[in-house]
Length: 360
Ligand code: UDP
Image 1 (cartoon, rainbow, N blue to C red):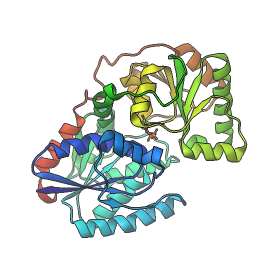
Image 2: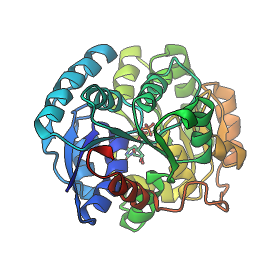
Image 3: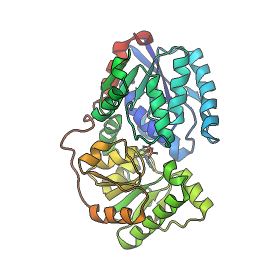
């Protein structure tokens, strides 16, 4: 029996892990132990995903959140190390680019337990983003690198991975697996009464929330769009809510609490456009046929820009307003199967199986 220790902790990781976890459950000869670091802990940032997406309750629940990056990552590293020693997995599986990802990979690699990284090879080339640091370091200490796109594979080749004793595979994107699998579970958020065609916005990246000028400019643009162009529906991330309150900014849009995945799928389905700084939501807009405007200076998902499905506008208020006005209601189509068509989890599990016990 191959024993996998999966490390998750943040909202997008619950969604990604749900599809791989189900594929593991449906496969003989492989078992999964789940460790939740506690990085996201609110009921609407964590529990709701376990309940809706059928993710098994974590075997190991840590309670590590808040504090500085160093403090959070350090505490996770110490506790995950203990879990690896105790459970002796054949492999550790990590997702994406959060502090939980890096801590999980580092704890395992130092104990000579092989690491598989889902979403390997993504790059924004902006080393000021904590996510960029986490993903580059995680890739360096993984021996099974599951890339979601050809672009990600190319990044790793350019960084010299072809000459290393590791395996780089393009498996497609687990987020497309999740979007396809759960599309027919769409659920309107309780009491939601905004007519279809609204602007669905999300805002939580540190590059925006930790830069008061950028945040103020984005808030002004959202307020303008809401009164002049179309209702802006914003499920507000707890980090953004705190910063907005601290800076005394006034958000005059249709604010709702963060929603579960089924509600998010419903919102994506009924939106006229997606306006976001999220990584995952850029692709989900595409999966649901909606144009996307991205409030960042770089994106890891460059194929969406090349396909004309996504426009990068940074935090410039006028650019945000112009791009949204121009793209509202525009439909986009995935004619090239950019993200693998929903087979990523299956491919990942089959590769984990073929690597066998202790990674060999
Ligand atoms: N999401 C959600 N509810 C919300 C906002 C986002 O379920 O209120 C989902 C979204 O559909 C996507 C994931 O959370 O699957 C994206 O996570 P997030 O934007 O927090 O992180 P990122 O993708 O930027 O790492």
